[in-house]
Length: 455
Image 1 (cartoon, helix red, strand yellow):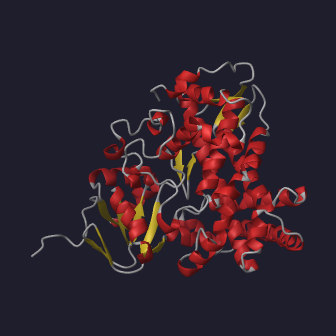
Image 2: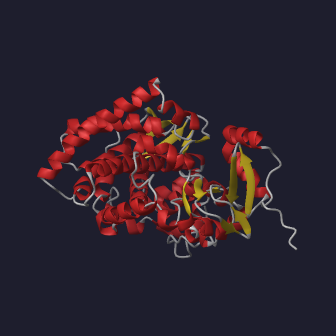
């Protein structure tokens, strides 16, 4: 006769205390629970049964092996009134059909076509030597420009792009608050927030209607043209546009912001990055991607410590078993890149240190397996059938933007920066920085130092 309890062990706190702990410091709570229960933990949060899965093999089981037995969690459900039922929010057969239709847009050859767009926008940052800027805001504007131009194409009327971008900016400001169940409630009531939401949605849809009709008459090779030829209805196309822009813009902006802040905090890493980009014959080009091994390592390490998607939730659709524990239909399963990416069991005693060199092999080339972690211990883009469809797009954008900025600028952050977990992991406010031009300081690189051991 088994003496196992019906639930795996978990923290000694009641449902209300767990809810308050989550609202006060969800990152600290997840870290503490996983430290005490490193495989799977059970806790009740208000009236919900929640399982935190932290072991990489069990993360794989929850997100990949059991993918047909789970659906997206409550955070995605709260996003539906805002984003519609696009790839980011939908489930089941609709998700599969949309993913198949969108997959060609994210083929490696297609993504490569966006490289010059990303570089041109990064080169055009309106920064000046000696001025003070908000890096977070700058990265938000940059990635929103990339997203809208990739979506609508460069031949769309500038006034329409500006109008769409302003409406989407309002969308994103609401989206950033969807982590709170109170916001979802406010969007269902006649509140000022709902009026802002509806006005921005109408404003965006008006522009999109006009752009859709223009594209029908003259299809090109942009993302919108591809959607129009996918067989989706106009409603489905609108939902996918609302998904693509906030998802690609917000996650990448946060990854870039955290990277630039970490470079400021670690001058030795920044100097090594500068040596790599200064070794290029000129400003970075898309063809330089295969040479930017340390740049990629810098970003991989940033997303290890500060993953834009810091928690991934699923809801069991049927009774299932994880690690020998029965989990009832309706229960929530949570995995956390924030927790697993920082676990010393997989990343060593320096797990909390920012050390991009861990990703380079003896020849100085980037290798995702180089740190020696289990394969499933690193998942900033998720994994399984719901892995981010734009992962390749995001890697190209972050690498080319960081390389372009590092070649031209040095930032000096002036204020304290802390993480603010919402739907994504943002900074808790502006990242104020002095901007210094690197034109005068660039020198002949010490090529030998690029492959030397170090951070």
